Length: 111
Ligand SMILES: C=C(O[C@@H]1C=C(C(=O)O)C=C[C@H]1O)C(=O)O
Image (tube, rainbow, N blue to C red; front, side, top):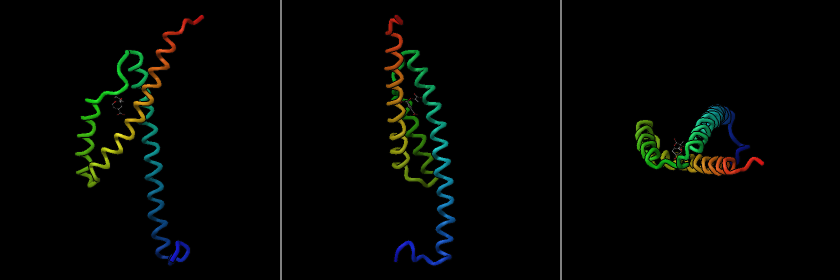
């Protein structure tokens, strides 16, 4: 049995479910793009005011909140935490890059 041997009603159901998955994936990409736009602004603000790229206390509060939300949505809280940590690690990398660039610019002579 391969994917080519699927009966028509099963194929139709699979296609319907996959259309929904594709819509959800598109929404996730758009939401992440908006989130990164906001975090880039936070990175610029932090660099301008010499604040550290990471804020572990804020992250702890976000993890506790997301774990609760995940539980009430019947999503594995450990998965929600891993996903947030993955995203935040990327954000912190961006903030470090922004801080380096900002330090380079303010250290430049302009000559
Ligand atoms: C965006 C921030 O910077 C970092 C990234 C966070 C995030 O992606 O949610 C949270 C805390 C910080 O470690 C922030 O401080 O709010």
